[in-house]
Amino acid sequence: MSFFGDLPEPPAQPREPQPVQPGWFGPPSDELPGIARVGGFVYKSQHKVVVLKLVEVYSTGCLLDLVWSVQRGSESDQEWREVVEEGYNHPRSSLDTRTGLEVGVAFADGRKAVAAIHGPSAFEDPLDVAGPVLATLGGGGGSNNSGFVQFTGRYWLWPLPLEDITLVVRWQALGIPESSLVLSGQQLNAALDGVQKYWDD
Image (cartoon, rainbow, N blue to C red; front, side, top):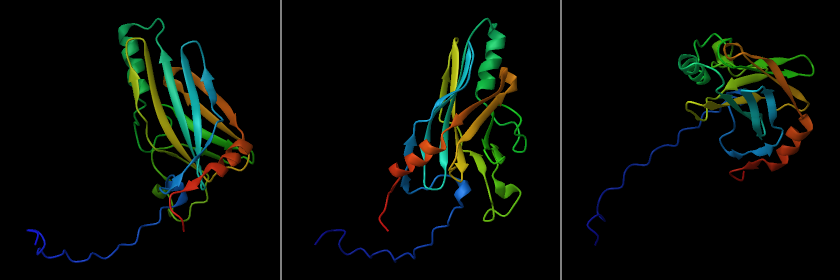
């Protein structure tokens, strides 16, 4: 007999029901997204760009993958340190969306959503949100040196738009004016065909 064979079995633990997250909270945790290759330059100048790399499409919404990069020009060392610090895009206040990189989405029917680091639950019943919602899901890393700075950010848009939408950005501290990129609703919807569930029902 094994030395461990007569040890008592631990008591069975009851399964706790998994909380249901509202759709605006973030991507479903049990889906492989489809990829919509609708990327492009939201803003481009001689030394600064804001780029939409790609869009991950889920059954309930889409995840926008943004990159911002600054190439050093004639800035002094102190000025460049300030650019690098600004490039991190640290939130200054949970209630102030007008600091750092501002990101929004405009719909053809006049609706719009602006990214913030708080969700709708700060103001309303989280289960009774009509949308649209654009939620900041954090950055994906970055790098900098004496010649350039580059960082990424991810933004969850809910619900999934069925029509063309316009992605709008502005970053006043970096001298990036309000700029936009139109995303094809047709391409977003075509990417739905690539969405796969992890588990069979």
